[in-house]
Length: 290
Ligand code: PHE
Ligand code: CO
Image (cartoon, rainbow, N blue to C red; front, side):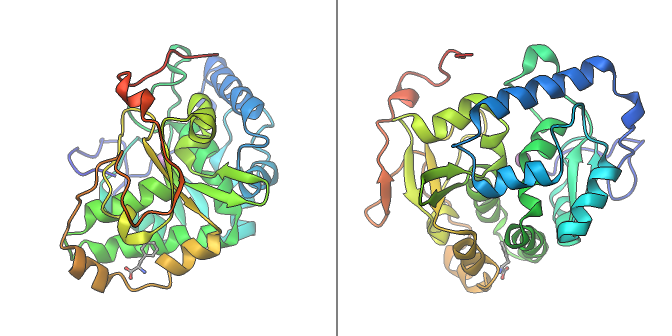
């Protein structure tokens, strides 16, 4: 989500473009296959079962970059969502409007082989592999639509950052507690090999129980692994705290307040694991361990 750029000439008014599937090169498809394989090596036992189910239902591992129309027909039959191609990041209100109408805007391009881990803008692997599987889950699908509607509504308040933090700490970097232990469901984690391991196994980040107003005031790192992950108990908990809660009084209370740093642990937090913060103190990025 961001607002400071212009619509490319080839994009429609709603910022969508043709996916142009037949223009992908053999190299593009093979980068997808490589990324897919790296994730499949680390995700079983780490990713939430709902994510794994979604991957399977959409047959995302059949080889090559998925064709959006075919994939959307399948997805639509499950939860009514479709995937539309966009050039990259789109303005907030455009993004919210797509979500509010059960359209997930996905980057059309794919990263290069020498940039498997670093991305400035979400590409088709992050957007499709990371986000689309969870859209096969009925509760999560409803949450995403409601988020879009809530986003449009929030434009009347000074609440964009608070709402962006909610997206960040759930849709992008959420963890969930299961009987088998913590699992990842956030798209930014499940589409990254190193963060899939880091988010669950590294001692440095905090893992804190989901509390809506707390995480809506928490800043986040966009250029490195997270220093705090928020953990939901169930998608029902997330749904109740968000979809079934009127945010207007919350916005009134918060007045755009955004006071907590990514690494903070508060007295009121339900601390699941308190991070050593060793990673952050060492200055960020660990050497890539492939
Ligand atoms: N219920 C929120 C509101 O009243 C909207 C919302 C739903 C926001 C789901 C985020 C996620 O504005
Ligand atoms: Co994303």
